[in-house]
Image (cartoon, rainbow, N blue to C red; front, side, top):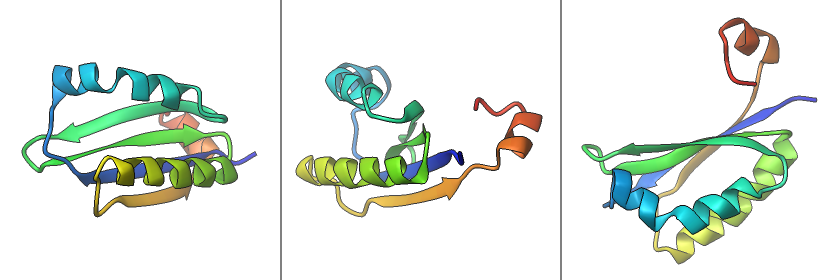
Length: 101
């Protein structure tokens, strides 16, 4: 099995930090229940006005399925200019460099 890493980012005006945490609790619970998701790292850069995340999925197909769902959801939130890419994970090299797989 080849793991898949999904990287997503988009322009974002805030809130940031604790404000984003409070606003996104229900969203985080929904994401945590996603089939095949091992973990998500939430990313934000207030200076650049960008937010997003990095996700590790059990397979490329599950990452693609989630990306389709999440893209629609973000569009409903008014997010435009979504950037997303799915990578296959080289497990041997990732393990050697202590990647959390």
